[in-house]
Image 1 (tube, rainbow, N blue to C red):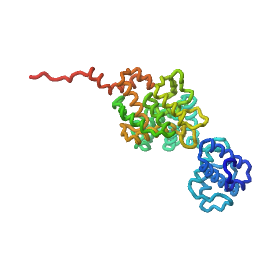
Image 2 (image 1 turned 180 degrees about the vertical axis):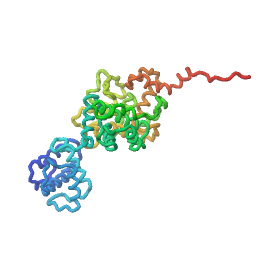
Image 3 (image 1 turned 45 degrees about the vertical axis):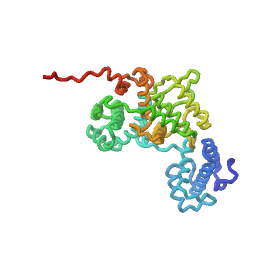
Image 4 (image 1 turned 120 degrees about the horizontal axis):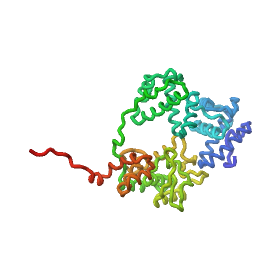
Length: 413
């Protein structure tokens, strides 16, 4: 190994040249991803121990999976592997799981079985969603969960589905869900039923069995933060690389009203520095050009110069700890939500609602107080309908006072 003077315990005893090469490549990836040298060494010791055990078990590298890692975990308390690290920390197995994930990304071992793939029916439905409905991956992920749960509950024979069974599924499996969350479940089930009906796999009309929970449009007031609270939140961001990144994210949220997913998806090429514009590709794959305010541009530039890790990626915002890469996972937007919640907690601000969306409401309310019309606010927030933006008219008390009518009174006797 070229990074350390001391050898990695157990690596020299591994006879498989291909496995040793995989470990060398893995070291390169760990170093490139920004891991601390001591952490890299711990990972390599763990992986070398795993390799020695694989040879003793007679297992092939190309066949390892979660079951193999679980067997290695059971082996460790009674380990007698020669010339290997004797570290009994649980994180040894965690390091092996990270190595397995790396091998899957490199195509060296088969990909993990997805719960959706266990059912041919669900797999065909998700393929139909992507190819015929143009669904984004976030939608596919949520629909996969709900439809899989439906098949677990009612079985994989759609011809046997009944209106009562569908209603029982919602009532029993999602009785703890709120009104808006249940509507998401119902949307997934309805789409699945439409697919089945189109394919002739279930009785038509079953989609009518799911009635939506009562909901009133614009029944609540938009709740944002005050100017003093916003200033306090921004000034409380530390001057560390992570704090500089978080401040840039928060400024984008509160000045442009971006969604969490919009921030995660920003690329370096989305900023037109000379023209003073920013390109946003957000909900529904709608791409718009927005003006780039001076303070937003300054915050992003400060992050690019003083806070962003020096790694090859065209995404603007990256993780601040190894692995240094764009926000990932099944729901990458949760990283921005975590940044927002941490900033609110650090500043001691009790928001009307926790998460990144409170900054979007704040941006709309600030624009309204500055005299921006609803059409302008709708353009910045990228609402498809002006009716969606109309909810912010409720917080313009000065305008409401002008149009309010006196309360009708009975004539005195």
